[in-house]
Length: 133
Image 1 (cartoon, one colour):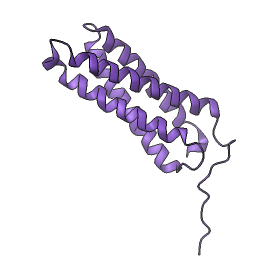
Image 2 (spheres, helix red, strand yellow):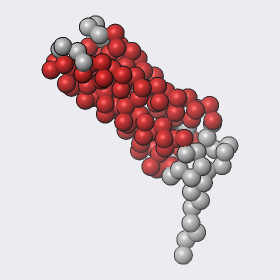
Image 3 (cartoon, helix red, strand yellow):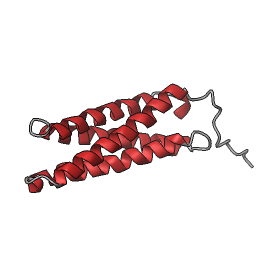
């Protein structure tokens, strides 16, 4: 019989500043993406913005989920956390590109793209943390 691997990480395993920065960036990205999608829904050109709106809504949901999981500092499963953070970085990258494609027309899309890039980079920094492996 094999001993069970502890599920709780030591507080020293993961740098609080990196985790806190990632949670903050993901929460800000979720807010920016929701705001962008909401504003786009009210735009007369809404039919042209469907992909941008859906991508922003998906990104907002993914970022909110990643932030929630990372905020559970004690008791998270490292493999699950890694998968969620990797997915969040990917979704943020896709959303940044889509929002950036509309940024010349809409300032809100530029703001969302910037927030997505910041969250993507924070997720990548989090993935570089040895304690998350």
